[in-house]
Image 1 (cartoon, rainbow, N blue to C red):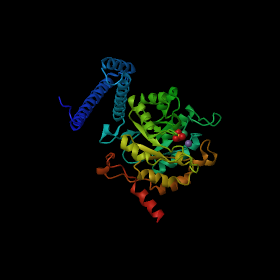
Image 2 (image 1 turned 90 degrees about the horizontal axis):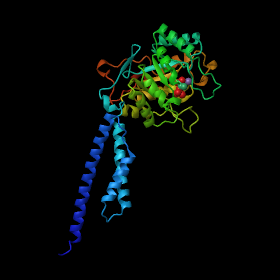
Image 3 (image 1 turned 180 degrees about the horizontal axis):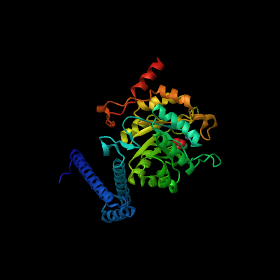
Image 4 (image 1 turned 30 degrees about the horizontal axis):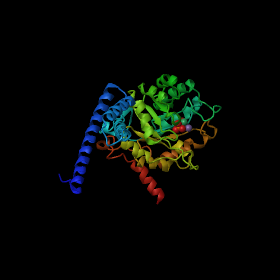
Length: 385
Ligand code: PEP
Ligand code: MN
């Protein structure tokens, strides 16, 4: 029989390639079905022993010409690609993924709506005295600010620095918040304190240093109080989203993501505000995103432009530190605005912001990110002119 010519052999190879591709794609689809089934049944996605068994069966059936070792190598590559596929599917099925709530996401806390028009959270770094909190709260309420922050459990770099007033601080924050009708926000640093902090505060904050504290994330996820989750000092956006998912996975989806700057080599600011994080987070998750300009900058003189940039990038709100006497503050004295500076800051960002017209009140979807208050943009443009 005449041997087939080169052209027809090559044509056969092409057909086999296509056939192999079709089989690999079929296999990948089955892998995804198995993964989805396992997720529903709570079975771990990856079982290394099963891979070993499959490899053993494959080599037992191998008649050559490839060596057993080559067959093992080829199939290990197929297994690795399947695992990658499962991990991607896992990411895409995060509860906090944008795709899960295409219509947007808002929630109410203390009579305020989060996730639609931008919110402003202000207050001192730490709760220090009832008088200090009263002075700030009275001013915030008079200026139309509705969220009051203040740390009572402080995660400080040195164990000898002021650690916060603890439960006494929670009482002060709650009382002053009630007196002035403000929504209170304070940090929790310990799983054992979550229940207590949730009893006192309207929103619990997980600070940057605890973004990777998965037990703490799970614990606040089991509560019913909204959570303000700060981005870790050196956390990637994926890690940040993963941490938010830890909270949501336990049932509490009322999470606010807070970009607060990340560590870089730059030393003129305390951290580097990652503006790109705002549209990226909003693109990938339906959770509201706010920007803490104070911890990003670590100084008081550039907060307004940073705030305007955040709003223009689509942030759902801002956080800023305000203290009646920053020079004697027990934490972060260099970055807190005094009451007069706060007033000027509000002017520069055009606060109070006009609510957006009713038809645009829907929370912005990925396709149409919320643009910051027009007054802020206009003011910045006129300052530049
Ligand atoms: C804070 O907001 O009080 C705080 C400590 O901020 P961060 O966790 O972002 O450093
Ligand atoms: Mn602070």
